[in-house]
Image (cartoon, rainbow, N blue to C red):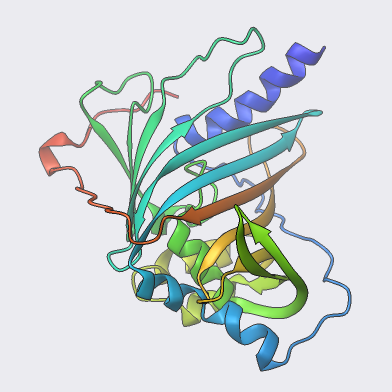
Amino acid sequence: MVAQQHQQGRAVVTALVAAGLVACGAGCAGGGAAADDVRTGTGTVGPVHRAAAALERAGSAKATTSMEMATGGTRVTIRGQGVYDFRKQTGRLKVLLPQDPAGTAEHRPITELLAPGALFMKNRGAGVPADKWVRVATGGLTDGNLVTGGATDPYAAAELLRGARTVTYVGKTEVAGIPVRHYRGIADLGIAARGASKEQRPALRAAAKGFATTEVPFDAYLDDQGRLRKVRHRFSFVNGHQKGTVAVASTILLYDFGSPADVRLPEPADIFAGKIAE
């Protein structure tokens, strides 16, 4: 029974990452109760709204991502690690899919290149030559690639915070030994899209239209320079291939600001143009 549930969970992961497409069928259903003791003064919302700008000033960073999905009575996790250039809004991640119930990995790590308007994937899976990349236009995805690739674009995650409407200052804590301020609240995808950079706006607009609700609960941890050290968004959507709702929690850790982040996008000849196997 456990193995069967695990396989069901991995089937959702495959639909999200290996196929490179989120099946939102009847529409994504986000949610989450508003935080207690909500405060909306500029002193609380302001630092969260400015998080993306602070990252742009920082230039670049190393990133660790985690995307947890609960479905079919089990929980599976996709992990990623890489670098991101916040000024160019480009990044490179190596994404690891969960192991099968026997403990043997069925998929090689997927290399993902993040760029404005596009997601490039290598080692995508069956039907794609090993030396070719698959390109997905993020503006055409119903979730704007917030969960499709198994990792939320770090700059898009920060831009989403521009839509924060209700925010509570939780208090001071630490992330990886760095003092941070913890904020909790709800962001609105529609508001975030209107305030986002022109590069991220199409994807966030797509997400605002694709989800049944535009509200996204979040926890954000900012250091003394206003830079995001950790951010966690919580999504849920109706899976078009299986009945029921899939809960998704996307977490990003940022560290070693200023690290080299040379991301070279594939040449047109290196992009796979054939049919992708399901």
